Image (cartoon, rainbow, N blue to C red; front, side, top):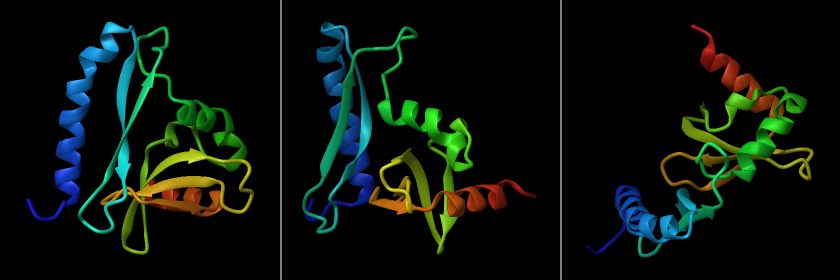
Length: 135
């Protein structure tokens, strides 16, 4: 391999995640992939994993998702919008969180192909999601 592609990063991260599952299970924890970043050069990337104490239903604890569910209505969104994708400027994005400390651009999203992070206004994201839902 001479250069990393997004598909390579996905495959490597998936295999690393599987290799770690036994270790976290031995400690009563859960692990989930939280994306990857830093593929700008094609020579290196940073796989991101989240290890947590499981919730009562055995699922991984996800602070960003819980925070999004708590704040979504305040920003004109629904808790179920976490993880939804929208398209703007010909590019696809996935909603990854809300940060109330950024009043102008509180919605966090990652660009789908490379998982690069971006910030959006809540109004723009709500409009894009609603336009996508309409037939």
